[in-house]
Length: 199
Image 1: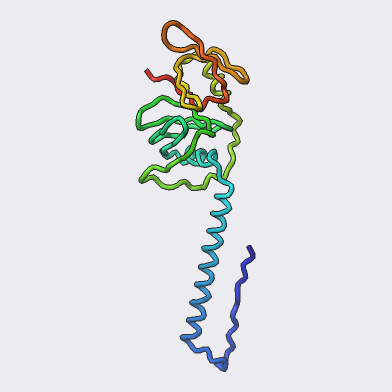
Image 2: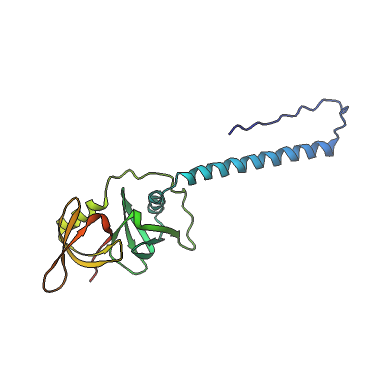
C-alpha cells in the first residue's frame, strides 16, 4: 500500500486568508488523517497475519508464551492445558486443571484454542509454520518402544487402554488391558489422541 503525505507550504504573507485558527484546523486535520492511515496500516498487517494463521501456529504461540489455554478437540476438552510441544501433525499437552498425564493430540482433531481468562493475549496470530518434523505416528512408535500403558482414542470416539506392541505405516497393535489378553489392531491414521495412562 502506497502512503502519500501532503506537505503544506504557507506563504509568509497572509494573503491567502489562512489565519491562526484556520491554520491550526488544517494541521489538526492532517494529524487525524495520519492517525487514520496508521490504523489502516496496522489493521492491514493484522489481516495479512490472520490470512496466514494455522492451528499449529496458534499452538506454537501458546507453547512459546508458556500460558495455559483451553484446547478443544474431537477427543474432548483440556482445560488449563500447557502446550509442551508442537510437531508436524501432533501437539503434546498436559492439562493442569485435572492433573492429567501428558497426552498427544493429532493437530487435525483440534477444533479450538481458547486463551484463559486473565492471561495476556499471544504476541502473534499463529501465522507461522512448525519447523519440527515430529509426527503423530512417531509418537506412537516411541510409546510402543517404551512399552508404557496408554489410553487411546479413535476418530469416532472409540476408547482403548493397553500397551502398543508394534507400529507400522498403517496399523498399530495394542495389547488391551485386562484379562484375557487381547489385541486391538487400529489404523494409525484414525487415532486422534494418545495419553499416558494415569493410575
